[in-house]
Image 1 (cartoon, rainbow, N blue to C red):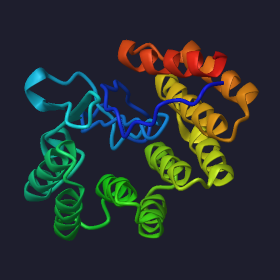
Image 2 (image 1 turned 90 degrees about the vertical axis):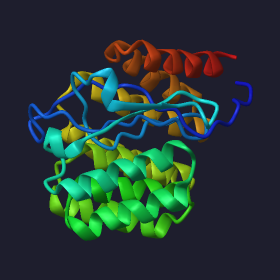
Image 3 (image 1 turned 90 degrees about the horizontal axis):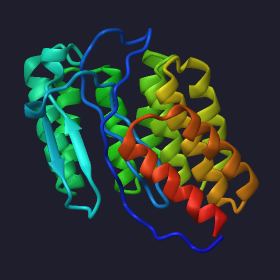
Length: 232
């Protein structure tokens, strides 16, 4: 396969609910990292156009769904507002400001697995991987079945070239993931890792699994992009 262009991130809409987070509408972020790996902060469902931020500052399409207080993801209204402000800064690639705002949200409403998950993502964006892992581990200590933390933890490990650990974390998350679309994102991220390891056979295997499950058109475009890269 030919070298694939490095890109920072892509965010796209996700529609999913699980037994761990039923019937709630919350912030969703899907992110493409390096070759492209999905990061999801929280589940989203049936969002309106007025509840999202669309940014192309990274050169990719980024969609942030907001208002976790209204949708039940964060209990404190000030913490939720601060979280949304952090997401706005992240969308503008202002990751230091975003991290500080997420930390403020965490101080207002500590021990929220969603906020800790976001902090893990943002610190990974700043290549502060040791601290990022600490946030993810704390999130999992609160809820060891929260599949999204496994998703994002795996991306951080992948980004830090800890490929074997990333695959282990993704597989752990798959054990708790009940939504087929979400399972497709896990398979896609695993394909991403194998691609970086130059294991194109397994990369293609898991990428095909992702194609079987993922229905979102924008997400499928990226899966097909990886498929084309593998076949080159």
